[in-house]
Structure formats: C-alpha cells, structure tokens
Length: 388
Image 1 (cartoon, rainbow, N blue to C red):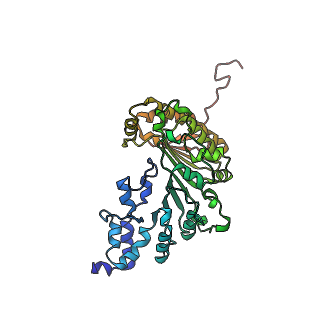
Image 2: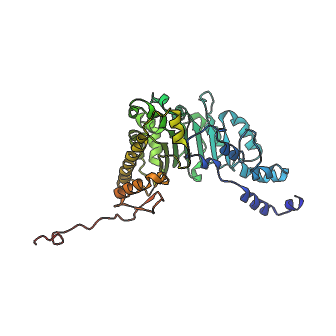
Image 3: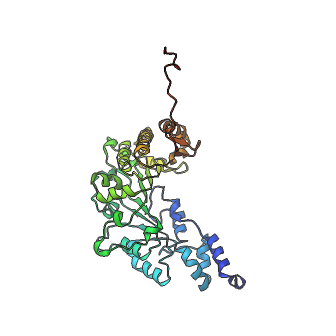
C-alpha cells in the first residue's frame, strides 16, 4: 500500500477512473420500477455511489478503496458521489455532507425515491437539491403516480389506479450543462417541470398486466403523468413538450387507447429528435408469468400482445406526423428484442415508414430519418402502355 500511495496523484486518479462503475440507475430505469432494496443487484450497485443505507463493500472496488486511507477517500469521493441516491428526508444530512467534502460541483446525476408528499417542506426539497448541486444535469424520481402528478402541479385524474399494479413510476429529466447552473428563486418557484429548460425526459409507467384481469379492461384509465398533463391542459407540460429533444417512454403492455393518448403528447414535441419506446418486458424477465400467476390465470394471454401490435402502428403514424411537422431523426423500438414479435414489428413499421425512414438492420430496432425522402418513380402513360 505504501508504494501505491507514492504514485503521482494523476496516476492514482486514472486508477480510480478505471475502478469506477456506470450509473447503476441505468440498469433499471427501463425495467418495472421497484422500491430500493427489492432488487439486490441494484441495491448493492447504488452502494458503490451514494446511499445512507448500510451496505457491504464486497464487489464494490471503489468503495473498498475509499475505506483504506484518508488520502484515498479524498480522491475517490468525487467518483463515489457522481451518481447520488437519496430520499427527501435525508436531504439535510446529504447536503451537509456534500458541502463538507466539496461535492457540490461533482454530482452529475440524482435519483430520489419519494414515497409520500412533502408539501410541508419549503423550499421544495428538489429545488434545494438542484441549487446545491449545480453540476447535476439529470434528476430521476421514483414515486407513486400521484406523487409525480403533484410535483408537476396537477391533480391525478384517473380513478382506476386500483386495477393497475403500479405502486411506483419513474420520471427522469435532463438538460444541458450550460443551463444546469441556473439558480432557482425560492420566492418564485415553479413546479418541477418548469423549473429548468429540460431537454430530455424518461417516463416509465410500469406494467398494466394486472388490469387485463378486470372486466372490460380497455375502459380503465391508466395512471399516467403524461396523460394527466394533456387532459389538464398543463401550461408547464406543454412548455416542457415544446422544448424536449429526447424522450424515452416505457410502459409494459399498455392498452392501445392509452398509447394513443401518450402519442397526443408526443405530437406536441416538435423539436424532438430521438424517440425511444418500450412496450414489452425484456426477454429474460419473468414478469409476464409472474403477473399471470398473481392474477390466478384470469387473463387472455393474447390480449396484451394484440394491444401492442395496434400500439406499434399508432406509433408509426405519429412518427410520420413528426416527420412532416417536427424534427424527429431517430426512432428506437426496444421491443424487437422479443424474438417472437420481431419480424412483425420490423415489417409493419418499415412498410409504414419506408418513404422517409431507413431501418438500420434486422434486430437493431433503430430507424433513422432519411436526408431525402424515398419516393417510388411514378408510372407515366407511355410506361403503362397508354396511347400518346
């Protein structure tokens, strides 16, 4: 250890850089949202960064290194806290710790697990967090749907939440580092959506599978921040939509009429350049089997897939609309990873988009906008054998 510590700081920094791990939230943001602690791999990975929960250092090399000497802890702290995870009640302790160790300019992303309303806190916890950490260009909130609605300054409009297994959803907002430095005015504080000029948004609504077990499931209204913003005619929501450059939308087996409502929001995103959509669970997950068992088998297994197929065509229509009226450049469909539906999805979307879009290749799930539209050569009278 002594010889290691005598290395130049620049070399030690490189060692620390290679011991660092990616943002652990990236591994779960497109999965069914879970409370911290319910996913063992995620819980151990966030311990490599920041959490007040006790955790083991096994398989966490950066955290292990930080516990060896005071000098190495000082060097590793910026990497350990680069992707921070907390709950609002831990805010005071977290901000005090960050100030003590000069981490205010080191944190690049934040994940907050919010289980209840914190309307009694002033200033709002998220505003204090963003002001104290001006280097953070991304904030993700894992919370019940009604909490996300409240953070957006709107009322929950669905009365069918009981039919859905959606205790938690995810909202993630991001922006350019050029705008992250802007300080929020606590005396004139807007809601979260209008607080910053957000240009990237991820919405993960969770799974709708349980609702398929209810009578006339297609009449159920999905708890959804996006549709709530649309039907509440939210000024902040429309301003956010108008500024977005990138959107990731995840909903496991949503009803096609709900997807149609989501697409009404997406059509307002005229500056949108990248659209990512995921409507099916990952191939290796057991969510479909687990939720069918939980429902006692009271579900037609064909219904969710039929809803997906209709939803894909609705998405294609919206992509065509944004081709004409917007600036959309890329469409990423994660559902191509499901081998059983890959060909159907690829063929149907390619057929609808081929005039304006090119597919990157089988299994890629990526369509890119052509620089010039592909148009079939019209057949003239002479070509058709007509008389001049």
